Image (cartoon, rainbow, N blue to C red; front, side, top):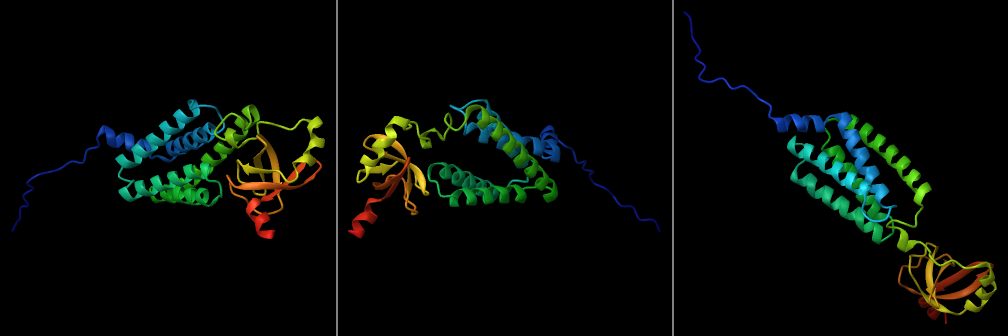
Length: 233
């Protein structure tokens, strides 16, 4: 006896143009290119004035990378929240030095990248190549423009002491001022309306704290927290 199986409908899987684009964007080669442009572009932007080509290319590459992984169903809502938190931590590290938020931000960013990776080995290779490209790009830019023209400009000493002003450093002993950068233990402080390179006696002093010059050694200006000096007295 023959039995017939009736097939009511036959569905054929089709790929849309969006699926094709998402598949292409999430391919290992393209991921490597996008991460290299995003990391290098945004890192270079830190050392250049204004918001230029590096920042635009970096943001565009990051946007394309995210679009491909969202369209491909590889990026969930949890991943987006983790990525946002990582980026916020990295941005805060620029304004609140200390290292902890920067480390947490980098760990969070790498965690998200490996979470959404179709293949963990391919992502490791892509991230490694992007890191090398970023380091090379940053070193090249620093050799050309230095640290003085980008986001690090506020942290760089602009007023330098002339050789003929060195003997007057002794007169600074006992003078008070305020730190304009964290002292770890070196940094910059404003003393008598002048920004000067200073060094502490070994203690960490936060930005915005009052300090006092306790002694000078040649061209070195050694300071201490005004609070510590008052406690000693």
